[in-house]
Image (cartoon, rainbow, N blue to C red; front, side, top):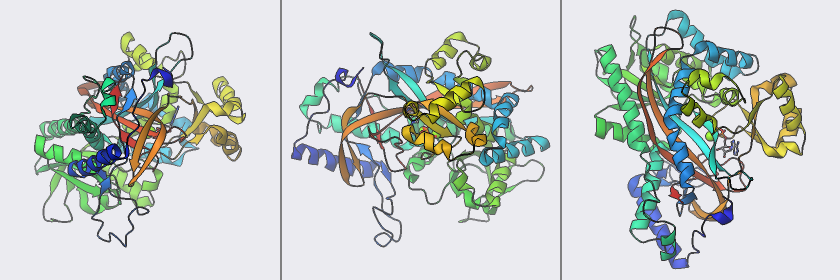
Length: 513
Ligand code: ADP
Ligand code: MG
Ligand code: MG
């Protein structure tokens, strides 16, 4: 589906049409918490010393076009991906082989693995784990005659998969603009019937946490009032995204939640001797103790979260605890880019090892884009020659074992980047072919400004999975497995990266065509 195959959309707006849409976006977004704390570059501390202001999250004016068959394809494979990554998480031997290749060249991965080994040596006291995953895709169009667009996976996230809170609301915003006839009549031929799917990420991600919370209570007979503890960064501009999950847990499930910055973990939590139950006494009521059923990590995924040795002690302390982790260290590591490269190796036995069902594994396989190692294997040597040649490097992105955006090296920057790096460190990266989704027109509203032009979209599909380790290594019992809504992020077609929080992209919703 080339750009011309998308219908003409969106229509050019008159000044008053645009003003009307903008007024609605500005009011609806604040009224519904489709918001972020402003960057200091937008609202300075002098203007807002109390940190009391919020602004509309970067959003598109119109829901972007997305091929319906691609949307269905990504959603249909969601539960199989949950199965795959839960299976990898409990296969310590397999994961260990992959991590081994990275230990000497990636301190961050090494430190995470060491925590796992330390907890393993004294014995884990919690066998249930929660994954709130997000599998990200772009539309791929094969150049060959008659082929239909499909999705290719950009990456799979096993930790701190964000924007589920905002996503439900941006799909709500676009539906509101449609139902109040804020869009010009010309959109009617494109936004028809069920073209705007609702994103159910808030209730579904909260449901995942609620399921873990009640599984904990069932298995552990808590002696204290229980809570779900969000481990967060400070400052956090994307706080409302997280708050929506907390509010839903509270109102729909009567689950108590608290937020604790990663910095404060060792000050406000302790382990009950023997049981290693995680007890939390909040700063605002230190005489109370809550038993943490579930730890939800929205911090701890990047080296920048670990500025002192105490942060590593804090992660170890949490991993040792009896709380259900979302994610555990092993599930965190299962999400590394290296795992995605190994799974995508052509004719590899790995996928069928974890997903014996042929239909499920071929559905997953069809979403893989080519990814190569940068080691000294035959495939790695071929990849090295592609990556160091300025012409062929144009087709690729180079990724380290990192999360959270801003870590990749793109296209023509790859050869000089590699040249600056000792060759012994090259295997810490993977080389991935760039997916080239068709561009379309839209307008992004960000920090009070409009940017119109060609944009490209990335679809994320959330998945929730709760499982219990089996008695034998590699075995598990899946307790819950469901798809948990979708996210569409949209960025300027010229921007390589496109993270919403990092300052490039916007949140969007799908207009299915
Ligand atoms: P992170 O874990 O930091 O989010 P990603 O693998 O998602 O890392 O890469 C960040 C961004 O880079 C993506 O959101 C996407 O915009 C772009 N990107 C990554 N891989 C590809 C790819 N193969 N093709 C096109 N764009 C990509
Ligand atoms: Mg990403
Ligand atoms: Mg990621």
